[in-house]
Image (tube, rainbow, N blue to C red):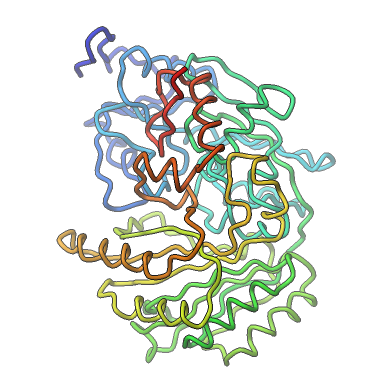
Length: 462
């Protein structure tokens, strides 16, 4: 492997387990799996994958990237929609071996290494009747979802994942291990709460835990018309903050719980989660059942981990995706959504709508690097397809769909954005003063832009 001029060449044979953790090189039995990420159209071949077992080894991997000049990708769960967990010809720092979790039940806090999955953390916390909100998938690593913000089943009730983040241990570009919180390196603590993987390798998080013995939730499937969709979203907005709703307007896959006559046709497949007593949750959810007779209704009292769908690690979808925030789903918007979903020729096409607000919006927009606190509804548009030759058709569909429902909110959620150039990073993800502040902090902690395998914030020039 040739290094840039003035850099030390990478010699894979000199990399040892003792110094760097598990070493996986091209030709090794684990290499193909180690370079595969969730999204199916990312096919990159790193020079080496290193799986450190502690922060000291993480620091050595960071130093190795700095000395060789090779690109450094940091992998947690490998679920980045942009495939940020792997790079071409560079070094992958894979946190798979760093999964320790220490729960302090009395203090309602937990220290978690950043390679642990959201599912592992959630199951362990639930054994004590406790929870931290991480999203809606058990397979994601807590590192990536936290650094980008974290929007999920508990967000309206308890805020985003970053709102329960109390401290971070992070290896910076110069190899120093820092513990950051509101009182120690507060500028960096502000930045990592929403600024993505731009500032170092987070090795441990300290989270707040909430009491949660169970939820009232699950999947509800409804037929869809513009009237039904408008009413469903309006009910989600009017619901108490204990309820979070994910509304998927899809061409129905052949799920066994969806009547066969609806397969391939648009439906509403919603996931509802009421974080409170089942009796109160049932009363709230009954308002959704009254909108139209459900085609399937699996909403019930369950332990919190039971709200998450089954995980299939063998799935690697190829998709055209766009993410955005919108202000409302009125009749005209609902009509457009149905028209666009129906017009797609993809295997599965749809719009996922998440009503926000609640505890998310009560945090000031400048309190963390997640600036979109007042955004009302997140829309995630997806076309899943199999033939790479169809990519342009589906990308055009997604782009035109986004333009057709664009309203006043020009933002997007960094964790769900697959492609972002410098203008989008500056104007959409981190607009205005937030982006300027992040660039200054980047210049302080990563002036050479070592951590650039992400939606990259360029260091400010002094």
